[in-house]
Length: 233
Ligand SMILES: Nc1ncnc2c1ncn2[C@@H]1O[C@H](COP(=O)(O)OP(=O)(O)OP(=O)(O)O)[C@@H](O)[C@H]1O
Image 1: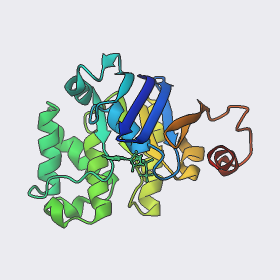
Image 2 (image 1 turned 90 degrees about the vertical axis):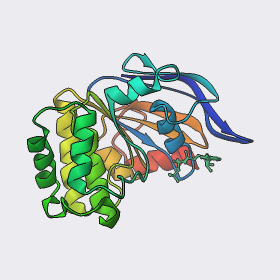
Image 3 (image 1 turned 135 degrees about the vertical axis):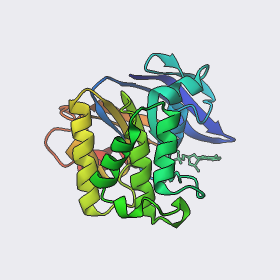
């Protein structure tokens, strides 16, 4: 689903991502972990065609991201970090707009399902600029999954969500991959990764320091925090 080979991004003298190679298979719920400033967002931006790598190769669902970034956007659901929906549309208008861009038919039912599942039907007619941060995140999650893409890439999926909504999204993500979807998330919340991810990669100062399945013997049964701290300190 995702193949990155020796991917690097430099900003002047800063090596935000440094020669990272990764493979994510179909059906995985894959977590990209790392401390603040370790390169997670930059990595996601390269995987989704939002930032051009300094060097390296990346394909998503077999499509070369560098030469066909728009095709990658068609094939995947994406939520960039702290992305906001357009201020001048209501929540419902935005979701309907995305459904039309994604060429969905009979989309009103699907949109209503999301409003109800994430418990924000009462905010449908509110302008996006007036939604709370958590509700904006609910809307962004809804738009990413609306067309049921085979692959969804989310930078910090649970940001700004209350514990009940975090539970609901975690359950949704687990069931999505059980049904054959693939989800790639970044997070610095280790309990989320321990609870829902099937595979993880850890980056530190731009370099990949671990990549493997959650049941990798190197992690064992110890708390993920212990393993993580060993690698990043
Ligand atoms: N546009 C940019 N220009 C210059 N430096 C940048 C730019 N974007 C990111 N960086 C730098 O690249 C490094 C990695 O940043 P990045 O945002 O990818 O980290 P992150 O792991 O997502 O961090 P966080 O968990 O704090 O969101 C940081 O040193 C950051 O300052």
